[in-house]
Amino acid sequence: MSAPNTWATFNGDLKSQKFSAADQITPENVKGLRKAWEYHTGDVSDGSGQRPMSVWSATPLFVNNTLYVGTPFYRIIALDPGSGKEKWKFDPHAVLKALTQPDLKNRGVAYWQAENVQTGTECQKIVYIGTMDAKLYAVDADTGNPCRDFGQHGMVDVNQWNTVNAKWPLSLLQPPTVYHDTLYLGWAGKDWADEQAPPGTVFALDARTGKLKWTFHPLDPAVAQHSGTANVWASMSIDAERGLLYVPVSSPSPNFYGGDRKEKIPLATSVTALDAETGKVVWSRQLVHHDIWDLDTNAAPTLVDLEKDGKKVPALVQTTKQGFLFVLNRETGEPIYPIEERPAPKSDVPGEEAAATQPYVATPAPTIPDKWPGVFPLADWIGFGSCSREAKKLRYDGRFTPPSLQGSITYPPTTGGTEWGGGAVDPRTGVFVVNSSSVVQIYRLIKREDFKQQAQNGESSGYYAQEGAPYGFKLETFLNWAGMPCWNPPYGTIAAYDLKTGKRLWNEPFGEVQKYGFYMPKSWGSVTIGAPAITQSGLIFIGASMDSRVRALDLKSGTELWSKLVDAPAVAMPAIYDYKGKEYVTFVVGGNSILLPKVSDQVVSFALPG
Image 1: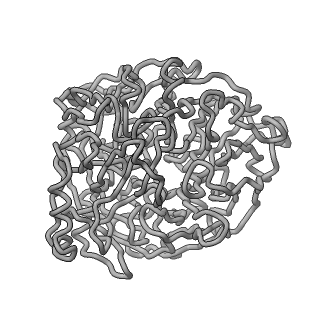
Image 2 (image 1 turned 90 degrees about the vertical axis):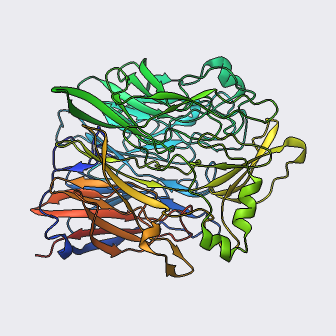
């Protein structure tokens, strides 16, 4: 599965490098890239009917001479990689309800094959998909037929292990990480709803049978009783040489008030290394202390070996919502570039005690500035001064300004910084590429007796109960009446770093904001969801932006070399592969309601003509 010409995992490989050895498409000829084929799954919803809106962020997998995609209706579709022709489909007839998320979500499928494949025996190669109601399905990769020896006739109900504060199912939206004969499974929950919630768990299952091997619990049992989550909802990485599994752990509940969970919770909002065989903690690095901002560690760390001081150092790069790049020795968890504990602002909310210090990384430079960008004069003018008036009323003390009753300017907020896609690396040079969003949100706590449940706009704004805590919560993106950001652009950037020195090589606005049918200036950039992929020939391929374009950039400079309009924002990494002598770049085009209400069911592949 780690052969040079596969895209066998969500992140390309187990190291989460998002790097392809393909070199047929180059900076010189990429302008000639054309649509090779497209396919429509039929699994799409704009939310206007009985079904919730679909959010499709599924990286396609190219392995076993097949392209596999998972849909937001939890079907698996196998396609011919060169033509897009359908080979087979699997439909679990899943419950299509927003049980834990505001939308129907899926980030794709996972693939396993036996070390010694026995020809003529079923399920020697397996594709897996999870559902929002916590069911994990396994099907034969060649036929799409359920694997009868896996769980109950091809399905494991993961909710059987949901035994503490079981208020909602353990939603399986991220495909499992597969290593040897084990599936490593995290889950997503219902954010911001409850103080007491299911505590985070990672399950290790037998890839053939679905039987439980071990469980990892980030929360101490005593804390889990009155808190919850600190789950692993993002993808994970594997160091096969060392047998280590790296898990990005999210924040505990309730997300925006920690007065009832003042105990030290060292594994929350961390990157943690586990022994892949046993699930025992080898090391852990907490990235936010006493997290009251929902700054989940939200992407698999990228593993890469670096040359430093004449020695090869096993490193990992953990991107974060704060825009920090934590570069650590992946064997020990020790910093390769310094991590400084800096004083952090105190909370003025009765009952809350914010952490006195927070980790800060100066090198590599954060992807977004330390201070919020300030009021955007054009938005303030169009808003008749509303932006500046509101800003003066709000609390702001720099990074890690705590949520407050008056309302706090939060920068960066839960939307990032860098989101769940993480970054990509060229392992030959140590050049690391990451896209990042610059968003300002207002965090406002509301006393329980004053809290009234009002409208929610998915994951981007609204009122959230934090039921059981003394405070509810209002989340608001800082906009004027016309929907314009009240803060200065750019709203999205993409940057490259030399990990050997920590130096930022370039940093450019990326994407275009689309509003009311118009494109805003390129210098403004776009909020992005998704991640880049790098090729050996020196190209970056990326969707991610609001403007429904997929692009190729020059790795050396960040210059845009090629772009094509697709049916919606492509909020998933592409799969890059060679098939029968031709290189393909294949995107799932699904959209995401956080960017704009535009969704699709398109799979589109690009190649050079001839």
